[in-house]
Image: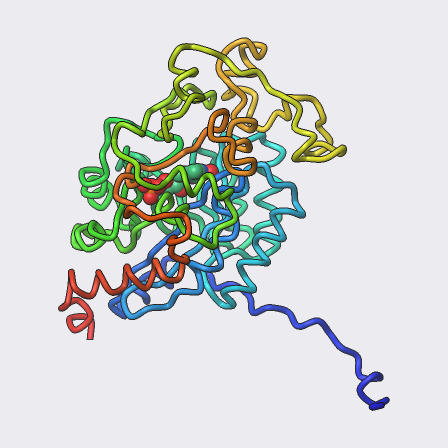
Amino acid sequence: MNTEAATVPVEPRQPAPLARLDRAAIEAIVASGRRLLVQGGMGIHASDGLAGKVAAHRGARLVGVGTVSAVVKNADHLRREIRRARAEAPGGYVGLNLMAAVNKAEFELSARVAIEEGVSFIVQGAGISREIVKWCRAGNVPFAGIVSSGRLAAMYEKWGADFIVAEGAEAGGHIGDIGHPLPGLVDEVVAATSLPVVAAGGVDASDVARYFAAGAIGVQMASRFLACSDGDVHPNFKQMHLGKTDADITLITSCVKGMKARAVRNTFTDALARGESFPPRSKAWYFGPEGFHGRKKACVECLAAEVCLCRASQFRESFCITDALLAAAVKGDMEKGLFYTGSSITRIPELTTEELPTARALLEDLEARLALAEPSRLAAAG
Ligand SMILES: Cc1cc2nc3c(=O)[nH]c(=O)nc-3n(C[C@H](O)[C@H](O)[C@H](O)COP(=O)(O)O)c2cc1C
């Protein structure tokens, strides 16, 4: 027996830290002729497991960026998800998606955990909080804002953002402005700000080159990654993304401020369209006996009080978003779940669940298609 080895103190090896995705880092990537391919954060478990796989991609034309979602994660769960991505993509770019519409206490806690874990950036959607920009500056973490107008992009630039995600009406989940499709929005946002702009919403491999030509330094895709074999979302969520046409997509009125949101049509969305309401149910099956941050009632107050139509109506109108999204992403309940999706769903190739690509294979395919679409860009960058 080698006794010497037993006396050597063994420190657990720390994974390499994530890299900061600030404006200078983005400008250096662009100067090298490459662009960002961002995996959009998807709330309530939908994007869990994807961030590290996308952030591990460093191709000739695309640099992968992963995003972890903060929605209904307690501090441990959030830390686990960030650390998992960091281990899969040491030195890569992994950010946190934080929505201003969530309960203020969780908003603050998620931001604190992400800053402690040294995420590459924090990106804010669904509402606006100026606090988060200040916290990011104090924590030396780059900040990005998701916008549906040039005006908002200009405001974020004044506040000190590092980059902007211009999210068009084609996006999945909550839509900032249903009258603002992505092609026009990208032009408007690029004109309104000097910050790097990432184009999001309904983007498919065949659109990527055109958004780069329009001045975007990256594209964000979310729904397309749902139909990958190696994300954690329930297999039925993946199944719900296959072989769909325009008739399978619908816009619902969400309990979040009454915003419009895009989802796969099913018995749940049909019931919402008829005006049925769905008060909160017990979530002990998911959060366990301790509840969510100690909140054990059917309503775990996941949203800021002033934005939740379900709570504001004493649970008589609208629906519980946490129940509906957990039912879809965790239980895979195809009838009672709410399956958010982007309009790009109709362009996902006809596949069976056995044929789904890995996130890595999807990125390699994007690289290859981009090489055909814009053969001269790399040469121009030198
Ligand atoms: C299931 C699902 C959940 C989403 N959750 C969030 C979220 O929590 N926060 C957010 O800012 N955007 C969310 N989005 C929007 C995406 O991050 C992304 O910007 C958008 O869907 C891009 O369009 P695409 O899905 O057509 O690629 C979600 C989208 C989907 C499909």
